[in-house]
Length: 87
View 1 (spheres, rainbow, N blue to C red):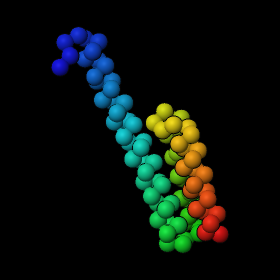
View 2: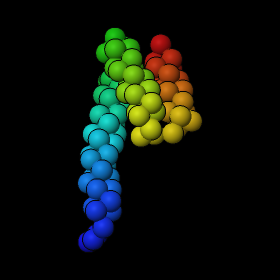
View 3: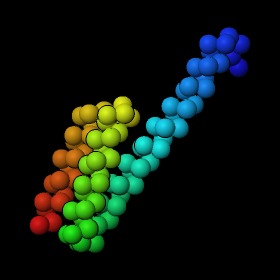
View 4: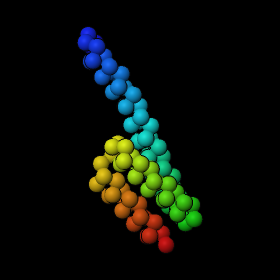
């Protein structure tokens, strides 16, 4: 356990940021899973709607620094390829 005041503060700040990152990452995974479920069910209209949500979640996670921009670009590309393969 930290004894110095600034170290105690850093622990609290780290916990807060960790919770925020977990929340954003969880929402991202959920959005991607919804899209992949729609693709697996061969439901084109639902896939289009959930694709937009997944891309938005990826962009938000990237802007918050939760995921790397190249990882987000790669995911978006692969999701778009799945969507185009359906059509």
